Image (tube, rainbow, N blue to C red; front, top):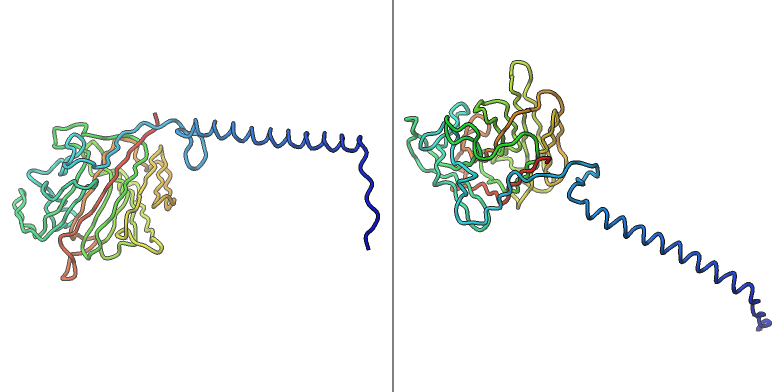
Length: 299
């Protein structure tokens, strides 16, 4: 059964509801406008806001290499350590390769360091079963004081893909411009037979006064050989922080953190005490690929 029809509201009641609706609308508009203004402000200052959300000084680009050309930029990179003469190696690591310039190539937007079973005699008079490639931004020889690109404090990001085979030892690391062997910062080391593990180290300047701390980080669901990965180091006074694919994986603080100009080394070693020698399962040629190296520091 239908009830009686409702009586229409009075005019004063209508006016009160209209004023209330207008007031609510004005508040909503004010909130939206405030959010828009904040977003514009934030976008304008994005260059000086890190992902963590704290304020820092603007960044200066020290090195931004995307390997877009067909040859290695020799104004930035050398193909041997400063002590090398017509090739080089690190004999103290018992490595089995002799680094050769022809094992370094650039194509299709990537730097490629290739190891292969190529017997050769080094300028040190020793015979080596393998040839491989390396690059460095450091001194070209013992008379080169500054190197090609060096810096004190900053952020290093490297986009890379490592080879996966027993006895291979790809690495991204830093050494002092002073041409000493310490301090050394190992941004990444990987072992070919276990490419799911990222290895990081700090070798302090005075090994008699400080240990060499290290970190092992195992990737979940992938390996450093499966597609491309980004390795990052933030280097600040008495503070080192490592990241793998944007995830912070290690943090070091203290006076053992280097405070002097350093340069970058990227290499693919073969054998040595760390990974052990290759065996019959090792696939050659093997290639360490890098398609971006970016170094920035506070202005």
